[in-house]
Image (cartoon, rainbow, N blue to C red; front, side, top):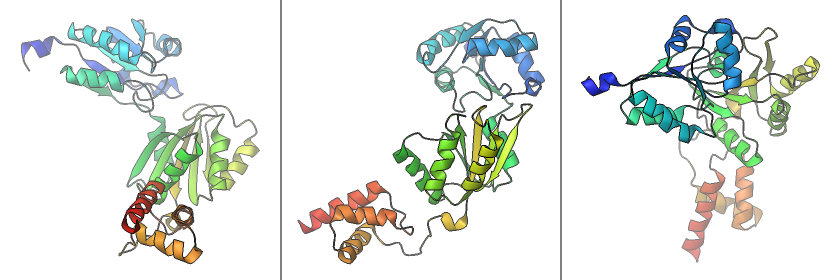
Length: 293
């Protein structure tokens, strides 16, 4: 490493507890104690943790609304030889939390970036799910819009991974479960609430069973949720050695139902054996139109 690189500070990405303050690692405490600057998602919430740990440092906000402007400030501090530690409200930074923009800027400036591992709600939930974790996909917060939700279901049915994990707020957890029931999603769930906290709870079963368990709990709309989903094998799109083209599927439906391409797209999408997306079928209908124009 040349002299200029040695003079630069280090950017530390520090995981913090997701509920239980005792999960803070000794190394993480040391890094936060020694750092010249601590970049926090919410300074008020982070101050509670730092006070418990007896840490008094320069705390500066770094949330999703000011991350672009603040990145330049932190980079200037790092280039001046100061160390910066990034933390979020809970868990590992950048996992559905701010931090990525600052890290990219640090990498471009050839500033050392060091991860300080610790708690992560998604990984913790996966570890206790009991599901097949040979491949898993973290999808962040479950979408709000129906169209986006169905795209997620399509990804699940295509077998993009064996297991999927989502975050969800306490106000929308029941809406998510009800959506899975309405869409007849055949998958087992492991729904974790208030991970690592005193009243941590886990709800397991198919969507309807989880809904009943949440209702039996009573006040289920409190605390953050992490949802792990493992689809049944018969819920996945059945793969065939010889795949029928989307044009052929549309033509077959148009002939069988005596309908236009627009209606054929709807019928194919409703077919459980179909593995084509709406956009792929629409593109196929345009190709058919060009061929027979």
